[in-house]
Image (cartoon, rainbow, N blue to C red; front, side, top):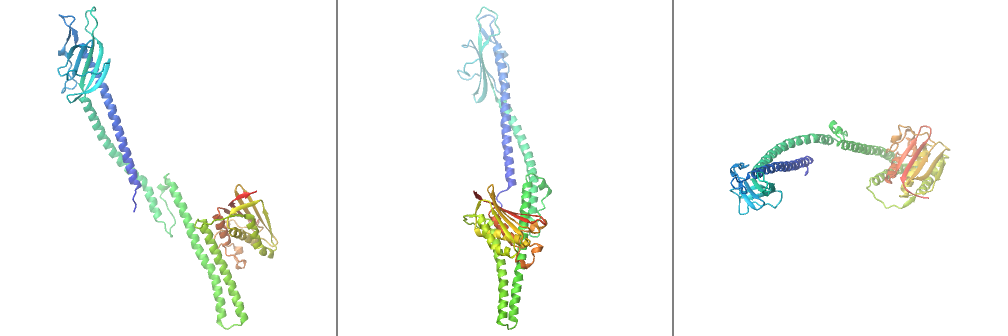
Length: 474
């Protein structure tokens, strides 16, 4: 049972990303709004502080006495909460103070020409501005020393807080609305984008031994992210179909090849058992039966060798191998096929350019070279020549077998390594072949990480080139 969902994960990722974005936007908006409102509030405080300073004047009867016109004090910013102010002359002489000024010392920010701070007075948050060294505007007698005022003005910041709260509320509601709209759109878009993947899975589920066509939807083929997956699935299915077909053909061909010697052997034994025979007739019949059994044993041995080579190539079998001289295995293969070559007067020329070693089983390599040489001898004309060369280049060893036969048609080249495949000219059983030699050779070569490549033209002979990863000793 599936425990994870790509769609669910993507939806969660999108929602979390949008929430983080909304929170970030809200924080930025609130910070900017608060900063702008506070700057405007500070400007208003500065204007009111200067207005308070302008209300200080000299008395008419006592020119040296400073008076404060309290009846001209501007109304507070917030009508529900009074403002606070305090005026000193030359930093020590108290000129005026608001009736609700708190405490004995009131609001006393540090000394500075202009200083702003926030306070809580009687549970109400205030923002205070202090202006120092303000020259008195109403100065009629120039003989008197100049007077400098220090004005402290504070006003509740409740309007700022309310404005920020309203902005936060509107932004939050708008963010929730936009989040719902964008989340719904993202979910719809996500489902639409994942639909080709679902259709591709449906097409893959229809694959069966009777139907090897993937038939991916057009939208999946046009989707950039799904195209590699579609191509990989098509390539995998092609390989599986090919392997399935080869396996089925192998079983059919093996049954066909086994049927013939078994039928011949059965016929021979039935003939011997049909009526009493002389000892010579029994001996001849048994020899014929043994010959058929020998052919059957050879076929079974070849099939078993092919199966083992393919298992090793697939990594199912592991062996610890020692380095082997490829040239030596070639000479052993030549000795094996030498009697067949001498019967037709065919010579074998062997050239080895240096020692080429490969960690391998000598019997495996000898079998490969023997199969290649037997094919070359079989198709070479009488008194012809088969050439075999061994060389190394750039960390790879090359073994080439060349004959002077009629060549292989281009239409046959792709099939020569198929199991039980035999060309028309070698189809007769008197050649002794079952069509497994090249298949076994190819499986063994690939098991050692090499390749085998046929090169042939009609009327110009055939070259078999085997390439193996080796270490060269000069």
